[in-house]
Amino acid sequence: MPATALRPLSAGEVLDVSFGLFRRMFATLFVIQLICMTLPFLINVYYTGTGAGFSGMLLLGSLVSFVLSALASAATAIAISESYLDRPVSAGDALRRAVPRLGPLLAVSLLVGVLVVVASMPFFFLVGGAAVTMGRSGSVPGGLAIFSMLVGLVSLVLPLFVAAGVSVATPVVVLEDRLSAIEALSRAWFLTRGYRLRIAGLLFVCLILIMIPYMGLLLLGGALLAGAAGALSIWVPVVALVGRLLLTPILYCLITLVYYDLRVRKEGFDLEMLAASLQPA
Image 1: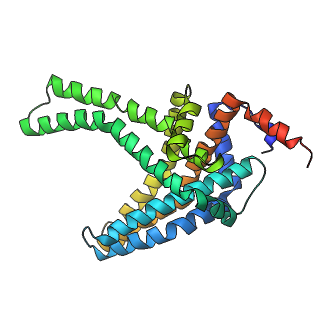
Image 2 (image 1 turned 60 degrees about the horizontal axis):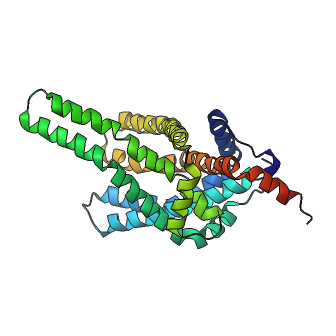
Image 3 (image 1 turned 90 degrees about the vertical axis):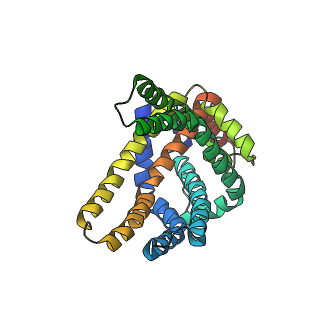
């Protein structure tokens, strides 16, 4: 999309353009995910196939997956951004440009996870407490338990609000001047101010669209391999890999596009890009 076409988008246009970017860049995004997810997949298959309990292999796999997932998200944001601004790059170039920002991106990922978990504590406390009370009594849940569960479900708005508020932290880290993790989160919180409910709705719709085919693959595998426990244990990480390769980039497309939409709305980024495009070479 040419830089001069940057403009505020409606929610429907954000989803439509996101899927359009995904279709147009499918090969590049697929290669990025494949490079970053192959090693965690092999570790997961080995761990699942051996049937071992908690071990160093599981810890190693989780660590490798965390680091390479962050790298994949950064490289994907770069590739999508360049394509959106009509400056396409290869998967290799996107990965090379992402590596220097890996440290701050890992810090941002950890901080985002902590913030969302802390924001989710009221839900776990209220719903978990009600469930424990009901389990001990063994009777029909009383009014207090039901009220606690309802309030707990309502409290899910808080982690959704926090997640929406820091949703564009990855594009901020990767695409703007070198910011620390705290600065990137602060910048993301500023950009999303006034639009967090809209962003939460977009993320919810996108996740639903992603989870439908993913759950379909899991259910299909479970039905076909119900009598083969070993094959079923391998099928789950295979489906997880396929889901990452084919579906996760859609979410990255949406987040990167939301980032540009916010900059257009709050900072006149369309005018900024237009002025830059008119400067003499």
